[in-house]
Length: 382
Picture 1 (cartoon, rainbow, N blue to C red):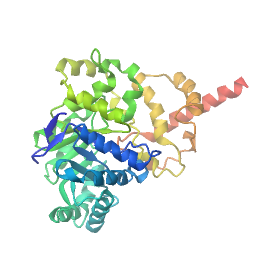
Picture 2: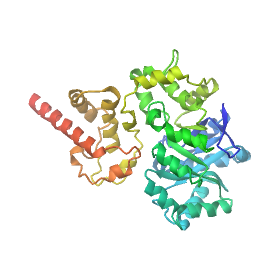
Picture 3: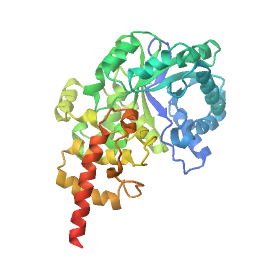
């Protein structure tokens, strides 16, 4: 395992981090908890979770593992999070920290994130007098957390503006081999200013493993696109930790194997990949699911956006998308959809929640048009 400095904290963190967002919730919680022990045995010392992950089970699963790992508690680091939009007062922020500690069976958290900053207003809300940041400072003074950090989906110039205020010690940002041309300024700025940088979504929300045959240009000879994507972030000197959402021991083994034999990308590799990337790569939906929470029509927006990725990734035509939609309705990601794209009322809640700032409403309009034509074609064949 590679270990790196986390900013100016003096902490040595594993280049591979355990992201607690992908547990198989059909399994017994104790079975999932054993994955953390397995990761620790493989050299991973950075464990990241949050309320609401995995149907709100992730912190509880972590708590089971923490009880089993308490003899080595001083040798690993645990992170959790809360949103300023939900914890908008100092008291609420403190209560969120205390609740996480209780569920995790810990006396303190090594890192605590001001979570899901999608626009500057969210950051300003966190920093308002009597707000979340003040509550986190109180928790830090009381020894409940060691380091206040920030999870953000902002672009590079906005990240730089936040970091210049020197209120936090590190950032968690979505960065991967597909979107790096559009996200790199924030990562570079943070590193140069001495902040710790943690990468989330290194596999673009599972997009890379699911489309390896179309993404072979990412990899070198003898390497899979998934391995290449992991290596890209793990080997990057500007990134301290690459978070992976682990579901199985095999996932842990794969990431650790990449770290164990990690070779940095050469500039020629970067240039080759950049030349193959579409200018629309920053428009790809990563499937985070935040758009689903407040849809009044219960439209499976994330599934529709994953379907829409085919246009951005592979340049599919309208005709190809029309032909593909029926398969997805019957066999793919849209089988159990509770509502159709055409049911969108354009309320804007999904776009407000979207961490990628995607124009979801217009995309749903396009998809609704494809669905309409596909249904008409189907009726004509009857």
